[in-house]
Amino acid sequence: MASVQSYRPKQAAEMLGIGSATLWRWIKTRPDFPQPIRLSARCTVIPADKLIAWRDAQAGK
Image 1 (cartoon, helix red, strand yellow):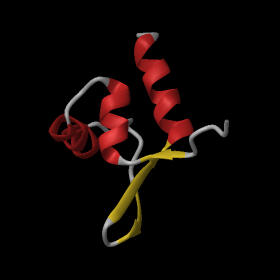
Image 2 (cartoon, helix red, strand yellow; image 1 turned 90 degrees about the vertical axis):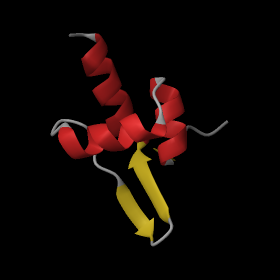
Image 3 (cartoon, helix red, strand yellow; image 1 turned 30 degrees about the vertical axis):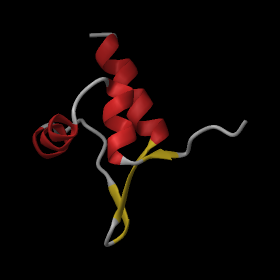
Image 4 (tube, helix red, strand yellow; image 1 turned 90 degrees about the horizontal axis):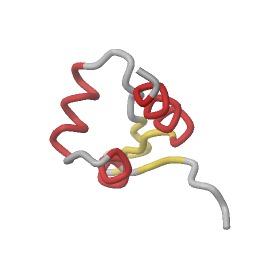
């Protein structure tokens, strides 16, 4: 099974255990939170490696 390269915003929120609104608020207000990448007008992703590294760093605090 291949590892995930990126998460759609809904998947990222589920992985972090938060809601979609909270995810977007964190993107806008937390400078250390991984920024999303727009692949097209209707497709936004967050790189999995950066999101997992951020989550692990938060768990260490």
